[in-house]
Structures are given as C-alpha cells and as structure tokens.
Length: 306
Image (cartoon, one colour):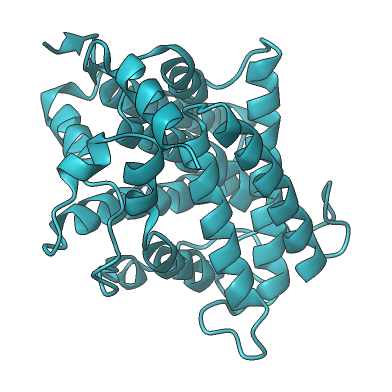
C-alpha cells in the first residue's frame, strides 16, 4: 500500500519526473560515460563583475588545506550518522565522495576539469558551510528552509526509501542553497570571463564519483537499491544524473537572477521563487512512501552494518 500526501504545485507531470528520478539512484559501476554535456551548450548571461571570491569561515585563504579540513569534517559527520543507521548517512556519504572527487581534480598539477581553482575551493567551502549550518539548525529545532525541513523530517521520521532521502537532500542543497553561493562568490572574473565552465565540470565529477554508491547503499543501508539497479543498462544512472544536472543548471540561472536584480524588491521575488521551487520539488518527491519501510530499512542496516 502507498501512503500519499499532497504533491504541491508541480502537479502530476513533475511528480512523475520525481518518482522516475527516485528509481534511478546512482549505479555507475558498469558505466562511465553517462554525462551528457548539454549544459555546456547553454551560454551564461551577463552579470556584474564587481562580486569576487572572498575569505569565508573554514577557508581564509583558498587552498587544498581547506578541502582537507572539509573532508575531515564530512568524514566525522558520516561516521557518526553511519554508526546509528541514521537515514541522513546516505547523503553524507555521497557528500564525502563528491568532495573527494573534486579535491582529486583540484590537486592535480594540471587539473583535468577545473580552471579557476581558488574560486572553486571558495565555492565548495561556502556551500558546505551552508550545509552544516542547516544540519545544525535542524538539530537544535531552529527554522530551516522548507525544502530542507521536508528532507530532514522524512529522513528522521518518515517511510521514504534511501533513494528519496538522497534526492531530497540533494535537491534542497542544490536548488535552494547553490544559487546564493554563486551570487556571493561571483560568476565572472574581474575581466569578464565566465566561470560557468567550472560549474559544468562538476557534472563530470558527479558522474565519476557516483560509481559504487548504489552498491554500498544496497549492502549496508536499504535493500531498495538492489531492486532498482538496472545493470547492465545505464538508464537508471542517466535518469539520476540528468535530474541533478537540471537542478544544477537551474541553480546557475537563479544565481544570475540574484546578481542581476536591480532593486531589493526584485531580489525578494527571486528569493521567493527559489524557496517555492525547492519546496514544491521536496513535496513532490516526499509524497509517495511505503508504510513500514522505515522499520525494514533500520533492521536491514543493523543486520548488515559494517
């Protein structure tokens, strides 16, 4: 039996997209070329060049040390969540692996993907600051963005499967948080060159580091992943990657809107649209659950814990 809650303004079509994405969580062990490069065909819009990277908490001077410190903090969080079979451990592990993948590219003598290393490091650390800030605010019962509240409520109390938990957190972090990071760190260099190349390059990193996540999830957290794995077909991988890629492209465009807002009223309108879109996506993805699956997941995790 399926429990349903109102899906919000997206309607049936968007709900179908969300459910398709849920059934398509990363399973990249057999495929490594699922990154379809359509975002690179979409040109960036003009934005002010007056906004540039700046020192932030945990990274006063952009360097690999900032990445190492972040990875240490992410590992501590994941180990703590993993030890108790907390459903938030799945997204935490994905965060670890994506961050490690970005660090690997940034620390090569000749980076394969990233052109503006210092800018990307500042973006990554500021992005993670938002993540830890929301995580701690929720833990202390302080207000958080609605998309995050729905994601964490579901992870802490609901019957969502592991795929929904990961996508709910991914959507909230990408669609709600990322536009503000880009708008704060600047999207063009002082001479006007766009940094969108590096934004698009993260899609390739996501493709690489998703490899093996589904297998780990299936072995340790939720038997659901064994049922949806479509190996050797790459369709499940493509479904997830294209969904996340679309969220990331939307985040870039919303950041452009934030930077190009001419008045406080215009900026508030952009902020409201970011809040609404991310909330409605969360409502849609959380609207279909299986009663009793929480107990199934918890028992499976305890039995198969490392």
